[in-house]
Length: 388
Ligand SMILES: *Cc1c(COP(=O)(O)O)cnc(C)c1O
Image (tube, rainbow, N blue to C red; front, side):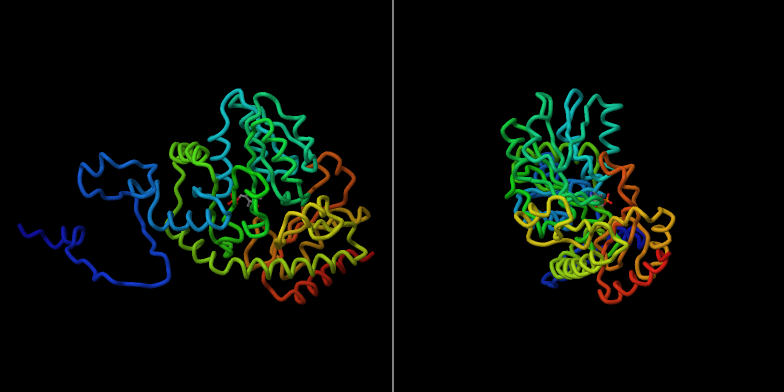
């Protein structure tokens, strides 16, 4: 039977020649994944990454990205999520159940704090918050029902650098898992597993993509039993990522190390310049001594990202520091970071954290890839609005 031309548009009979070779990872778009036979379908296991079962469970494109990210962190397993926050949620749902307790740093990424509130109010899980500088003292906070400790190195607004090895040691002694949000370091500047963490989460939205155009997250582990729990949560929650987005992240990864080094060098230069300014009370950059945990950063990190904060002298009102941010020409006002464009964002740090009540306004800078001299000139002209 000869199919009609319309059927041929769907089924076709053309097979391209074999032997095509090029550098980019092919973009495989698929919801349905085809099996060779019913027997092959029946013997397929969605968890087995040596084969394919359904678009949500992976394609050659997403498996390749997962393998690269696992290798970058010196891990063995990786699962992709549609955003960094979705990756955080996957960790919480994989390892917490009703009756359990989770510890989060007080400076935790705000939506993770909000998720903790939701787990407490609606899911019977207690979420408690600890001083990020607690170090080994975390041991005293661990309860028999504590299952998971989140860490963030450094916190992405107030920038304290936690003592990860001390926290991990205390957690291990009591059999509690430690998850690290390693977004600031992009998996380049901090070796999470070497310091003892069990689970590494990254927002690929930041440096990995590098283009301010993709939302994606990843969870990386070394132990099979942990990956299995995560894979069940990943499947049950339906965490898929788009093939084009996975491609954009793969494309960004090749240049990430160079971009990260450029963000780092420019951010340190600008942070030092700001430190010398009379309008600025403190520069919270882990590579500068003003930053809580600076010594820990020196001991544990191999570099710094482009993200840091400054606290303006308390004599300036919020209205004045807002006017400073509005006066910047090269810095966009917006969330996220890790892209080529510089950003500035004011935070009411005094209302966010215990003990920071009297602090002046905090402005967080994401230093992009523009010429640092131009960025300094822009900040200098904007600081003029603070003049009496
Ligand atoms: C951006 C970010 C996230 C969340 O990533 P999204 O992809 O925006 O959901 C999580 N943690 C940190 C530290 C981040 O900066």
